[in-house]
Image (cartoon, rainbow, N blue to C red; front, side):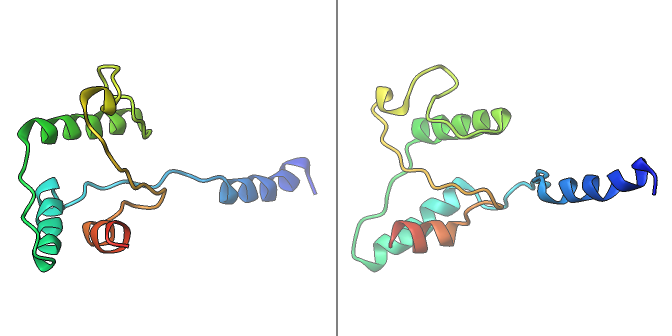
Length: 112
């Protein structure tokens, strides 16, 4: 058996165990879908609906796009500030497989 033939199984093995980034796809849900789901839950408990803050929505969208460009999650905003320096408190859920859907975010993470 040649050295080349002996090496091939190891290359295949390494290729299988090394995590190859998956193809990502654009999610179909919008930030407004999340707010609607949360407001539905609040209504079930007799609470007033959250109101959308256009500045906060723009800040969050820009931050999400920044993280996507960097391919990394961070609290540091693209302008070098941290959310709490702008009076923003946040809670982030993340994972390394696909993305967290709105029902999972609201019903399983936020409620629980």
